Amino acid sequence: MLKWYVTVVVTLLALLGALGTAEVRALDKVKVGYLAAISFAPIFIAMDLKYYAEEGLETELLRFASGTKMMAPIAAGEIDAAAGGSSAGLFNSIAQGMDVFIVADKGQVRPGYGWANFLLVRKDLVPLVKEKGIKALEGMTDCLWGKGGISDYSVYYHLKHLGSSLEKFKSVFMAPPKQFQAWQSKACAIGNAAEPWGVRAEDAGLAVRYQSQDEVPEMATTQVAVIMYSGKFVRERRDTAQKWMNAYIKAVRHFNDKGMNDAKILEILQKYTEVPAELIRKTKPLYLPADGSIYLPSLEHQLAWFKLMGFTKADASLARALDDSFRKAAVAKLSGK
Image (cartoon, rainbow, N blue to C red):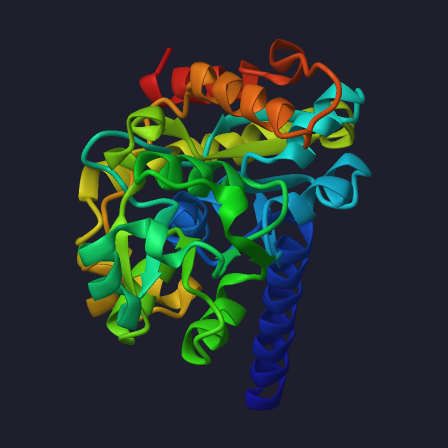
């Protein structure tokens, strides 16, 4: 009798295990390009708090060096979604009719919310800049994230605001982790960074967040980064794309409700960015509109600059590339409409 009972229990446990495995396998996977930056907080939150799982989804994060490098894979449908800064690559993709849609906000600068694209000055050069101005560093090297990215745009206006210009510096391009090595070897005089890279450079005694983006009139309100969907994802897996957005907007609301210094949010950000929570507390605040809406005038301003600088040759129809339907449907669902 006991042997029969044990056999039944083992069989039931095996069946339950198989069902659990089947359930995990049944999750619809969404491949998302990302950077280890604080502005990815809603994506990290939605993963950690199981918002995607609640929608029957699994998000696979694929790390890139910059938003610019995500454009070819998303246009080809190799990744389903991407979240990164606006760039010449984005605008050129739109102008060429490539299969990419802007579907939601992923971080803005507003007055008092200057978390992105600081002008960093190497710490040992700060006294010289304070005495003689930024012109004293002309001819030296500036370290930017990626050529044709929003880092070019932001440093251009930072330097203009301080009485200098981008062409008077030697620009080199590297991902934030490599910038740390460049600061340490004193290869860079100035640079740019979004949080948490700004506070990390400052905490390490390598550079100073000399000027924040919201201190520069042309950039005080800037659409820094966006959520993009591949055309293939939109057409072939529209229901999945909507579910992903539902979870994303829910996480945006959670972030705004709790705030950056909430213990759980700090824990999540530390986990995904590998930056200690005590450093994250020191970062400049991030602005995320509760409805996930894009600030289109800022993208139009950036597009005009990229055309002026020769990064973008053709006219890009931002209206053609903007698909608001997923974001609006997610907001309506959360509002119970």
